[in-house]
Image (tube, rainbow, N blue to C red):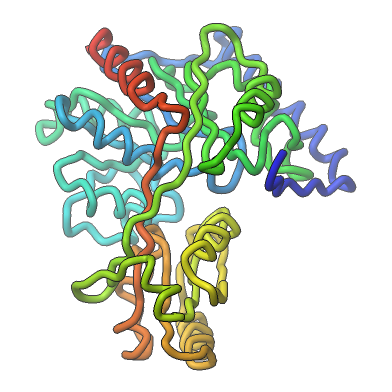
Length: 359
């Protein structure tokens, strides 16, 4: 596969075999009904993957919010990964990021009219959204990263697969990044291959289609990332992407995401000089990190800016100790998705029809 980023730790394959046995037993218990999966009358759409690391769940959730909010009252339910509290929390515009996690905070800031809630117990979260006075007018619930959460049966199950890390070429954890076997892709109603090259050829489409070998009832779509102009993190203002190369601006690319290589590759399309500074996914920046960021920026040639992701911006917004020069030149790199092969209308119609029939 073009741009393949798969790395297999073959010496861990025996542990992957054991891991696979465990996931097989769990899935078999659900399939037999020994472990129960609950259905709800409300339209529930799950967006998830079967790999660890970033497949672009948040921009796809945002796509669904934009699509469905035109007609329906939408809620997003997440587990709130790495948040610093437990239980059910309904986000408000002023809810601290630490209480709900960076991705839910990002969604609430961008879509204040959308209900955004977090709860590790997805059943409880759904039932609270449906019954609480504040949210009982909800008409559609989007489940973020819930493909393995089989205690709920979504009426529409969307599986995301990273084009650069095809599940058919990967291995189970810990040797690879698969959370469960490739065959479990069959639980999905819709598969979206994400982060595709914009110039993917017809042969490239067919290669992916044949590799996935989907069932007749499963719809297949392809998406790519679309970038907006850089927006200042502190204060107002934006910078056109074309200005980076035109003015020979050096970029310190600061990120704490699951797949920083994709962002670096895309940034190099706009800037000639890019210096990556990467941290683990959902990383909470510390005073030690602040010193590292300040020093890295000071060493760079001028003119210079710091660029980060929308998700990282949630954790950087209240960070103390950044040099004023850095704060004045720190920008966010907004991303959206675009459906390829002129299939956006088809995708939208399938989702809208599903919601309409199940409302």
